[in-house]
Image (cartoon, rainbow, N blue to C red; front, side, top):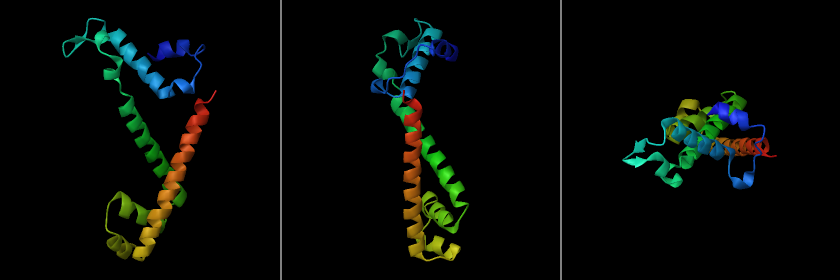
Length: 143
């Protein structure tokens, strides 16, 4: 599949109006798998080539996985930028590990209000970082 894509990549022109690039790759992958498996392969008694494309759609799943990866990368970037500060540790314990603000505050020697402020500040940083990563992705796909 990858060699087919690379062979056609010289003529390929990305058109954002037609959808996301990863959607295009998903379609190529599904079609390549059907070709590889053969036209007579059946899924639940139905020939693969006869199954409506909508039923083969994996885009919602791949979008979920993509978003999860985006948030994971944003979290890594924010963690690195915060250099394991008390504010990030408070956010991590309170939000990511779902511990009570009171326990987190006591363990970190901070006030409960500081824990809530850490949640708000780090959450904003995460949102901004995710948005920045989306902009980078959009610029990368732009003609």
